[in-house]
Amino acid sequence: MKSIVSAAVAVTVCGSIAFADGHVDRTGWPESFTVGTASQGGTYFAYGSGWANLVAEELGLTGGGEVTGGPMQNMALVHTGEAQFGMTTMGPAAESLQGTNPIAPGLQMTNACAMFPMYQTPFSVTALSSSGITSIADIPDGARIGFGPAGSTSDTYFPRMMEELGVNFERRNGGWSDLGGQLQDGLLDVIAFAAGVPVPAVSQLEVQTDVNIIEFTEDEQAQILAAFPVADFSIAADTYTTLEADARSVSMWNFAIANCDLPASFVKAAVEVVMSDNERMVNIHRAARSTLPENWDKNGVLMWHPGAAEWFTENAGADIPADMIFGG
Image (cartoon, rainbow, N blue to C red; front, top):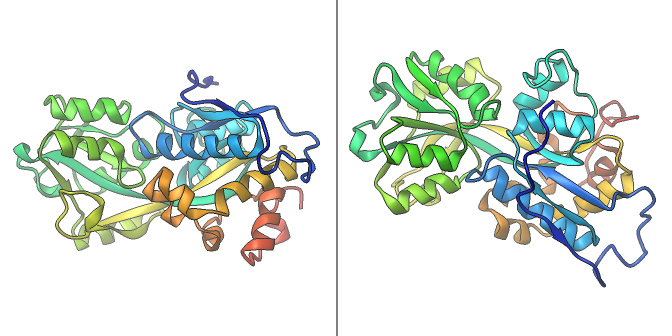
């Protein structure tokens, strides 16, 4: 099992803050926690470190985001308890439950529970304008494509999507910031992102050079929808300065996850911090515009943590079946 890479962000807060005044049962709460995110330069790292720091501050604990390999590794880390919290997409979550997670083949990671809905991960393709690549069909034979960290949602699904669309490529892996630099230096032809938008690495590229953000054609989108567990999605024109119109894409839902053995009161309190003030979350990352209570129903894969299920039942009118609640 891979261990978590060194801490990226951590905060320690003591004092008179909400949840730390004795009104909440804190029996069994950990003194500190970590949130498994992904590589720096990606949405998971920015979003995850942000909500980790927010929860740590509000609950009076030490906590923060950790750099990881992304959703597949986060499922493994949360299942084993090496990380208390993490973030995953529905595809990698389903594979992990089935025992086909490449981090630990054969291990059914059933001790990672749904915590709260985050946002949809669009799949998008970026190339330098100087490359002349303006469509999937333009990607040259044998193109060097960066698919993100090994085992990430992007690396798990985007190569399969490219193959489905008949693209022949050389597969490259790395953190999003590194891949952005390689694209700019001419070491890659294309980057295939699966990340909440705006992707920090793409926004940075836009500042430094001219890029093309490549959408799927209607036929390509239909082909992908038929072959993979994704939904149709449009990347709004105002997401990037490069876009002049909405860009056709597909997406996969992301959920925060919690180790199923954590105290219900702790998880419920953490969910309350995140879900009770959407404006505060959007200030952390614009992708949090979808981090809304009514999106609880986008989870059809993971068992719910009892504390999270209680919060959504009480505050979002959620009707979560007992057999979808861990220990229920």
